[in-house]
Length: 226
Image (tube, rainbow, N blue to C red; front, side, top):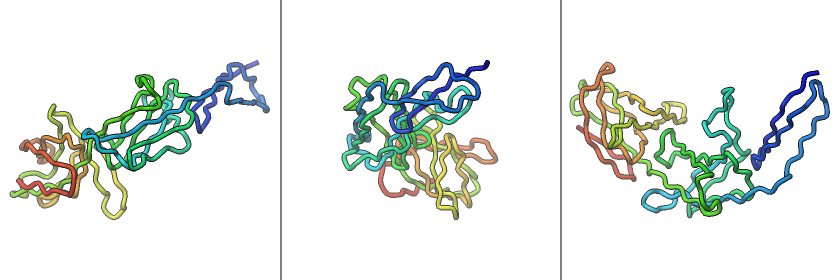
Protein backbone atom coordinates (compact mmCIF):
# COMPACT_ATOMS: atom_id res chain seq x y z
CA UNK A 1 0.00 0.00 0.00
CA UNK A 2 1.28 3.47 -0.88
CA UNK A 3 2.56 5.84 1.76
CA UNK A 4 3.34 9.51 1.53
CA UNK A 5 5.84 11.88 3.12
CA UNK A 6 4.06 14.99 4.42
CA UNK A 7 5.65 18.24 5.48
CA UNK A 8 3.69 20.67 7.65
CA UNK A 9 4.68 24.29 8.29
CA UNK A 10 3.31 26.37 11.16
CA UNK A 11 2.00 29.68 9.73
CA UNK A 12 3.10 31.74 12.71
CA UNK A 13 6.54 30.36 13.63
CA UNK A 14 7.59 28.47 10.46
CA UNK A 15 8.27 25.35 12.51
CA UNK A 16 8.51 22.40 10.11
CA UNK A 17 7.16 18.95 11.08
CA UNK A 18 7.92 15.95 8.87
CA UNK A 19 5.53 12.99 8.70
CA UNK A 20 7.48 10.36 6.74
CA UNK A 21 4.98 7.46 6.51
CA UNK A 22 1.38 8.52 6.00
CA UNK A 23 -0.85 5.84 4.54
CA UNK A 24 -2.71 6.62 1.33
CA UNK A 25 -6.33 7.41 2.12
CA UNK A 26 -5.65 8.27 5.74
CA UNK A 27 -8.40 10.51 7.16
CA UNK A 28 -7.06 11.34 10.61
CA UNK A 29 -3.53 12.70 10.17
CA UNK A 30 -2.44 14.66 13.22
CA UNK A 31 0.35 17.20 13.25
CA UNK A 32 1.80 18.36 16.57
CA UNK A 33 3.78 21.59 16.75
CA UNK A 34 5.78 22.94 19.67
CA UNK A 35 7.95 19.90 20.36
CA UNK A 36 10.92 22.23 20.52
CA UNK A 37 11.05 25.87 21.51
CA UNK A 38 11.46 28.60 18.96
CA UNK A 39 13.85 31.54 19.13
CA UNK A 40 13.21 35.26 19.56
CA UNK A 41 14.40 37.16 16.49
CA UNK A 42 14.75 40.94 16.68
CA UNK A 43 16.79 43.77 15.28
CA UNK A 44 16.81 47.05 13.40
CA UNK A 45 16.62 48.16 9.79
CA UNK A 46 18.80 51.20 9.19
CA UNK A 47 19.75 53.25 6.19
CA UNK A 48 23.43 53.34 5.30
CA UNK A 49 23.80 56.73 6.98
CA UNK A 50 22.50 55.27 10.25
CA UNK A 51 19.00 56.74 10.12
CA UNK A 52 16.21 54.30 11.08
CA UNK A 53 14.08 52.87 8.26
CA UNK A 54 10.56 53.41 9.60
CA UNK A 55 7.54 51.45 8.39
CA UNK A 56 9.51 48.81 6.48
CA UNK A 57 7.83 45.38 6.44
CA UNK A 58 9.85 42.38 7.66
CA UNK A 59 8.76 38.80 6.88
CA UNK A 60 10.50 35.53 7.78
CA UNK A 61 10.81 33.49 4.59
CA UNK A 62 11.30 29.72 4.62
CA UNK A 63 12.67 29.20 1.12
CA UNK A 64 16.20 30.33 0.37
CA UNK A 65 15.64 30.87 -3.34
CA UNK A 66 12.20 32.43 -3.24
CA UNK A 67 10.62 29.31 -4.82
CA UNK A 68 11.13 25.68 -3.99
CA UNK A 69 12.10 22.94 -6.45
CA UNK A 70 8.49 22.52 -7.59
CA UNK A 71 8.05 26.19 -8.36
CA UNK A 72 5.73 26.93 -5.46
CA UNK A 73 5.92 30.29 -3.69
CA UNK A 74 7.87 30.45 -0.41
CA UNK A 75 6.32 30.01 3.01
CA UNK A 76 5.94 33.30 4.89
CA UNK A 77 4.67 33.90 8.40
CA UNK A 78 0.99 34.80 8.29
CA UNK A 79 1.77 38.42 9.12
CA UNK A 80 4.98 40.38 8.99
CA UNK A 81 6.14 43.18 11.26
CA UNK A 82 6.51 46.87 10.47
CA UNK A 83 9.59 48.60 11.82
CA UNK A 84 8.91 51.26 14.46
CA UNK A 85 10.24 54.82 14.59
CA UNK A 86 13.64 53.44 15.59
CA UNK A 87 13.68 50.92 12.75
CA UNK A 88 13.15 48.07 15.22
CA UNK A 89 11.28 44.81 14.63
CA UNK A 90 10.68 41.69 16.73
CA UNK A 91 9.35 38.14 16.28
CA UNK A 92 8.67 36.48 19.61
CA UNK A 93 9.23 32.92 18.35
CA UNK A 94 10.65 31.58 15.10
CA UNK A 95 12.08 28.25 14.06
CA UNK A 96 14.75 29.85 11.93
CA UNK A 97 16.59 26.86 10.40
CA UNK A 98 16.83 27.71 6.71
CA UNK A 99 14.88 30.95 7.11
CA UNK A 100 15.73 34.34 5.72
CA UNK A 101 14.21 37.69 6.51
CA UNK A 102 12.42 39.32 3.60
CA UNK A 103 12.52 43.11 3.99
CA UNK A 104 10.31 45.13 1.70
CA UNK A 105 8.91 48.63 1.29
CA UNK A 106 8.71 51.51 -1.12
CA UNK A 107 11.01 53.49 1.18
CA UNK A 108 14.06 51.27 0.61
CA UNK A 109 16.14 51.40 -2.53
CA UNK A 110 16.89 47.72 -3.03
CA UNK A 111 16.24 45.67 -6.18
CA UNK A 112 12.47 45.25 -6.54
CA UNK A 113 12.17 46.92 -3.12
CA UNK A 114 12.99 43.76 -1.22
CA UNK A 115 16.05 42.36 0.48
CA UNK A 116 16.74 38.90 1.91
CA UNK A 117 18.93 38.44 4.99
CA UNK A 118 20.24 34.99 5.92
CA UNK A 119 19.61 34.42 9.63
CA UNK A 120 22.23 31.67 9.77
CA UNK A 121 24.89 34.34 9.16
CA UNK A 122 23.72 36.44 12.15
CA UNK A 123 25.79 35.99 15.30
CA UNK A 124 23.09 37.45 17.57
CA UNK A 125 19.50 36.75 16.53
CA UNK A 126 18.18 39.28 19.03
CA UNK A 127 20.31 42.14 17.73
CA UNK A 128 20.26 41.86 13.93
CA UNK A 129 21.23 44.99 12.04
CA UNK A 130 20.26 45.37 8.40
CA UNK A 131 21.53 48.29 6.29
CA UNK A 132 19.50 49.40 3.28
CA UNK A 133 19.76 52.10 0.63
CA UNK A 134 17.65 55.23 0.55
CA UNK A 135 15.20 55.78 -2.28
CA UNK A 136 15.69 58.79 -4.54
CA UNK A 137 13.00 60.35 -6.75
CA UNK A 138 13.50 62.08 -10.05
CA UNK A 139 12.05 62.96 -13.44
CA UNK A 140 14.01 63.07 -16.67
CA UNK A 141 13.53 66.04 -19.04
CA UNK A 142 15.46 66.14 -22.31
CA UNK A 143 16.46 69.44 -23.92
CA UNK A 144 16.00 67.69 -27.28
CA UNK A 145 12.87 65.53 -26.85
CA UNK A 146 13.67 63.57 -30.03
CA UNK A 147 17.04 62.33 -28.69
CA UNK A 148 15.64 59.36 -26.78
CA UNK A 149 12.37 57.55 -26.14
CA UNK A 150 13.41 55.59 -23.01
CA UNK A 151 16.15 55.26 -20.40
CA UNK A 152 17.62 52.81 -17.90
CA UNK A 153 19.57 53.44 -14.70
CA UNK A 154 22.85 51.88 -13.54
CA UNK A 155 25.11 52.01 -10.48
CA UNK A 156 28.83 52.85 -10.41
CA UNK A 157 29.73 49.31 -11.54
CA UNK A 158 27.33 49.47 -14.49
CA UNK A 159 24.74 47.13 -12.95
CA UNK A 160 21.20 47.98 -13.98
CA UNK A 161 18.95 49.12 -11.13
CA UNK A 162 15.27 48.61 -10.51
CA UNK A 163 12.94 51.50 -11.26
CA UNK A 164 9.66 52.05 -9.43
CA UNK A 165 6.85 54.09 -10.92
CA UNK A 166 3.09 54.44 -10.57
CA UNK A 167 0.86 52.89 -13.19
CA UNK A 168 -1.27 55.69 -14.59
CA UNK A 169 -4.89 55.59 -13.46
CA UNK A 170 -4.41 52.57 -11.22
CA UNK A 171 -2.75 53.95 -8.10
CA UNK A 172 -0.55 50.84 -8.10
CA UNK A 173 3.23 50.79 -8.29
CA UNK A 174 5.42 48.45 -10.26
CA UNK A 175 9.13 47.75 -10.19
CA UNK A 176 11.40 46.11 -12.74
CA UNK A 177 15.15 45.50 -12.61
CA UNK A 178 16.74 47.03 -15.67
CA UNK A 179 13.46 48.60 -16.76
CA UNK A 180 13.43 50.79 -19.82
CA UNK A 181 11.47 53.75 -18.57
CA UNK A 182 9.46 55.38 -21.33
CA UNK A 183 9.98 59.02 -22.28
CA UNK A 184 7.00 60.85 -23.74
CA UNK A 185 7.89 64.08 -25.48
CA UNK A 186 11.29 63.88 -23.83
CA UNK A 187 9.90 63.58 -20.26
CA UNK A 188 9.41 60.70 -17.85
CA UNK A 189 7.03 59.98 -15.01
CA UNK A 190 8.39 60.38 -11.46
CA UNK A 191 10.80 57.50 -10.92
CA UNK A 192 11.87 55.95 -7.59
CA UNK A 193 15.31 54.33 -7.61
CA UNK A 194 18.17 53.37 -5.30
CA UNK A 195 20.51 56.14 -4.16
CA UNK A 196 23.22 54.05 -5.87
CA UNK A 197 22.21 55.41 -9.28
CA UNK A 198 25.21 56.96 -11.02
CA UNK A 199 24.35 56.73 -14.73
CA UNK A 200 21.27 57.18 -16.88
CA UNK A 201 21.39 55.32 -20.19
CA UNK A 202 19.39 57.06 -22.91
CA UNK A 203 17.82 54.78 -25.51
CA UNK A 204 16.10 55.28 -28.83
CA UNK A 205 14.36 52.41 -30.64
CA UNK A 206 16.06 50.07 -28.18
CA UNK A 207 19.57 51.30 -28.95
CA UNK A 208 21.83 53.21 -26.57
CA UNK A 209 22.45 56.81 -27.66
CA UNK A 210 24.12 58.39 -24.64
CA UNK A 211 25.19 57.85 -21.02
CA UNK A 212 24.69 60.66 -18.54
CA UNK A 213 26.45 60.68 -15.14
CA UNK A 214 24.09 61.64 -12.30
CA UNK A 215 24.02 61.83 -8.51
CA UNK A 216 20.65 62.20 -6.82
CA UNK A 217 20.24 62.78 -3.08
CA UNK A 218 17.27 61.48 -1.05
CA UNK A 219 14.49 63.99 -0.56
CA UNK A 220 12.08 65.81 -2.83
CA UNK A 221 11.59 64.94 -6.49
CA UNK A 222 14.43 66.28 -8.61
CA UNK A 223 14.11 67.13 -12.30
CA UNK A 224 17.14 65.93 -14.26
CA UNK A 225 17.41 68.07 -17.38
CA UNK A 226 20.06 67.48 -20.00
